[in-house]
Structure formats: structure tokens, C-alpha cells
Amino acid sequence: MAFALPHPMGLNPHDDLALRAFAQHLARALLAGPWTPMAMRARLRRALGLARGDASPDWLRQLVRQLHAQPPFALPTQPRRRKAASAATGPVPGSAHVQTVADAVARCPAFRRAWSTAPAHAPWRIKGFFLPPPPPKPAAIAKLQPFVRELPPLAQVGDIAAWLELEPGQLDWLANCQDRPAPHPKLAHYRAHWLPKGQGGLPRLIEAPKARLKQIQRRILQELLAPIPLHNAAHGGVRGRSALSHAQAHAGMPVLLKFDLRDFFPSIRAARIHAIFACLGHTPAVCRVLTALVTTRTAHGVLRTAPLTAPSQSAPCGAGTGPSLAVQQAQLRQLYGQRHLPQGAPSSTLLANLAAARLDMRLAAAAAALQGRYTRYVDDLAISLPQLPRAQLLRMQRLVRRIVHEEGFVLNEAKCGLYTASQAHYLTGICINAHPNLPRAAYDQLKAILHQCVLHGPSSQNRDGHSDFRAHLQGRIAWCRSLNPARAAKLQRLFERIDWQG
Image 1 (cartoon, rainbow, N blue to C red):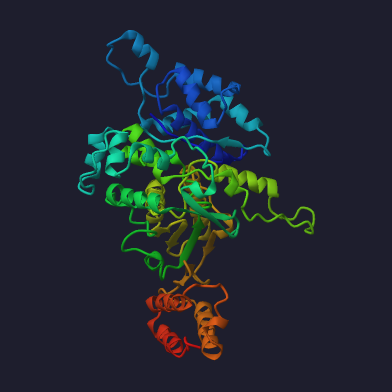
Image 2 (tube, rainbow, N blue to C red):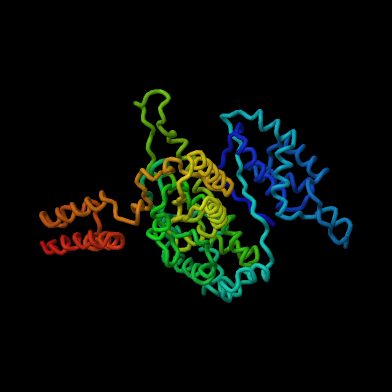
């Protein structure tokens, strides 16, 4: 069994790196089930996102014929209990052959001809990301011991309802596996609001579950997911780690590489979450319901309210003015119109860390090979390295881009950068050139706000309308205290001079 993850990854047909990445995805699709022509064609069609009525391209049919006639590896044998059944299903090769099959795909003449003649303005797209089949329950849980305690006995969907103390009808309504649209916005399970467009991306949608669903997601988090060990590089949403620990790991290093994952939470589709639950040994039916409880599909009415910005009409011809409103709407529908991790749910950060575990493993190994360090704080990736030739640093940048690409994520190039020892190094708003420290600009800004509060009263400075401005300022001072206690003491003295009664 395999899980197809739609994701909008366009590949430049004139890039050899893209060809190898495309062949890797096709190889995973080919190896995700029986090695028979019909099954192989069906999985490749899913990977390419072909609809039921679409004809298969000629190169696809020729590729399947070539690989089936001359397998690039030895097919495992099966006991012949029934000759007809064996012929119908065929042996299932192992996932260890991915690179072998990818090399065979890349060498196929029909595939290479089609790739080389594809127009540059119409890149090939992978729309189905295949994961290896989950191991059976005893093996899966044995791998996680001694980290995973006794899991709730969820053998069937009815057991989920009993565990969550719900009626079957209530569970069906909350999970909404059929993606039925809510008849009225008040009956939706999530409260949605938009944040303005960030640097180089679309507006960000915050989807906060309502009380009953939030309680269920917290229980899934605490009793099913929390015991699973995470990669040491993950610092966001992990007990005992924080933005400060993420920055501390790179303090004093001469070179800093920064990367940002675009649309991190919504880019993690339901198929990846399904695979996580499957690796805990749950049945497909149970995985489907658990996945539905922690993912969502955004209603079209919410997408229509996105604060999109039209490209500037006064910019000179050829200037990068950004996509049109129609293109932005299409991008939002593609991103949020399928089941995804909602940013704002209590279970989403841990699930995102689990979904990115292989990415963390590969990037940590790449950094360690150059005596460097790698950490990730949610969607912010950081690699610090010793002083190396610039050509080697650029190769590392290309390697990171390739790994991120192969793991199904997309980089926000506007937030990526290479910083040498002569430049300021900032991570999550912390200066880390010598040791973690409060940036001078942030200190001066907060000091000015506190000074104006002393002179003119706190209401004159609450420009963002914080409901508890006093607690907001105390929180900012506490953050300063964790980085620079001496400067925080000066800010605290200013804070104590504010007249909160006036």
C-alpha cells in the first residue's frame, strides 16, 4: 500500500538535477506496489496527476514496457499457492531499489527524448508523492520501543469513538472524512483568519480548531504522538528547546546558511500524516479517521476572503511585479484546497516535525560532513560551517536545495542567504556572531517605547491594540532578559516608572 501526496512541484526540463529528482519520484511510484504493467502504469499516472479520462503519454507506456521486460534488479520470488493469483499481482520489489530504478528511468530513451523536448515554459509536475508501505504493527512498535508507551487499543474506528468518549455520529461529524462543506460558517470546525503576505509568499492562513476538536487534537498529541522521539535538529514546538536553543547552536560559527520553507504547514498533505499513524501500527481505517481529525480542507468561502495584492500597473515592462490576482487565487486553492496540516492546531507542530524527520536527518548529515551544525525551528533552517572556500559553500547551498526539493518541500528564496564572518548573523531575531545577544535595533526600539510610555502614558504607545499591553511589554522585557540581563535590567527600571493608573 502507498499513499499519494499531491504537491505542486514544477521541474525545469533543461536541468539535469531536476531530471534526476523527477526520476527518483517515478521510481518511488513504480516500487510502491506490484511489479505488473497495469499496476505500474496506474501508479505513474497518479504521480503525474493524470485524470481518469486522460491518455497516458507514449514515453510512460514505453518506460513501463522496458522496465517490466528487463527489471533493473532481481525480482523476489513468491510461494506459488495459486498460479493465477501470482500472475495477477506479481512480486512486490523492496524500497531499497529506489536508486537502481531511478537510474534505469533516467536512462530510458523514450523518457529522455520526452524530457529534452518539453518546452521550458511548461515544466513537468509531480503531483503524487509516494511513501513506502508501513511495516506491520509488531515491527513498527518494536522499532519505537522503549520510547512509545502502551498505545490505546485502536483496532477499528469504533475504538476511536470509545477512546475519545464520542458517539459514532459525533466522530463522523468531527472527522468529516468525506470533506462535506459546512452548511453555515458557524458550523465549521475551525476559526480562520488571514495574516498579511510575508516576504516572497502568499498570505498566511491561521486555522484554529474550536473547543471540542482542539481537545481531541490535544489528546491525540499527548497520548499517541508525544512519546515518539524527534530528530535532535528540531527545535520548534519541542519541550526543552526554543528559538534561543536554535540560535545558540550556531553562535560563534564563521559562516551561516539560512533557508526558509515556503508554506510549511499547508504543504504537508494528509498522505504524510496518514503514513505517520500507519507507522505506529494502526489499520488503514483507523489511520484515515485519525488523519481527518488533525487535518482540514479550507472552504472556498474562506479562500475568497484572502487579502491578495494586485501587481503594480506602474512598474516598467519586464519588472518583477508578482503574479496576478487570478494566479494568486489559483495558488491558494492548490495549497489549501486539499487536506493539509492547519497552522493553529495544537497537534500540527509535532506532526510537522515528524513529517520533516527525513529532511532533518539528511541535512544534519550533510552539515556534519563539513564539520558544521544544522537545526530547524519550524520552517527556518540554519546550517553553520567553519571557514571554507566560497565554491564549497555554494555547493552546500545547491545540495540543500536538492535535498529540500527531493523531500517534497519548497524553499522561499527571498528568505535564503549566505552570511560570512564579516557580516551580521541573525537567527529568529537573535544576533549570534559571538554569542546569542539582543540586536541593538530591537533594544533601542523597546527602550524608546518604554520612555514614551513614561512621558505620555502607555495608551499612547499601544498602536497595535494589545488587549493587555502591560503583559505584552513584560513579555518583551523577559525575552531581552534571556539574551542580555544587563540591558533587560535597564528596561525593567523604565517599565517600573510607567503610570498604569493614568
